[in-house]
Image (cartoon, rainbow, N blue to C red; front, side, top):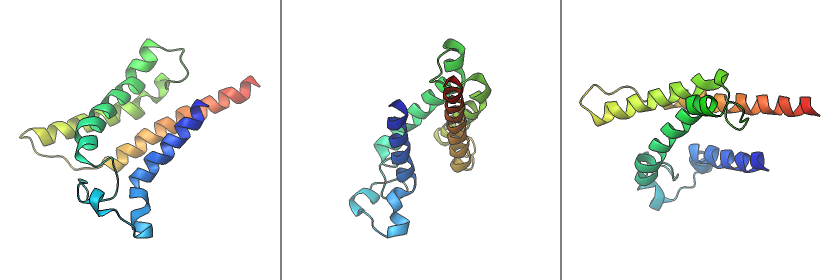
Length: 139
């Protein structure tokens, strides 16, 4: 049941990432896209979600999945194991440095978020795949 909710959550995230197929269908909600940081019809680029909620939450989740989870609760299969830690820690380091570069006077780094989003999703997928294999072996 948890994986069903997680799958629905991932579908919503994917739909958000492609702006609910705005470029494919040509349909846009101007009231949302006018407020969006990227000028697209999605909620995660609205200033509240993007700046206040999602950035700190991403750091916390990546640190939990990348280090704290396997370190404090090594037998909890819901959290990724140590072998997948770099998939999350590198993402957290990139976004922390990216946020610091924009909040300070140091030279801004390039915004290569898609690479790190792919790294994060790969870590989640590999953790999911490992759990599926374990469940099959138990049967």
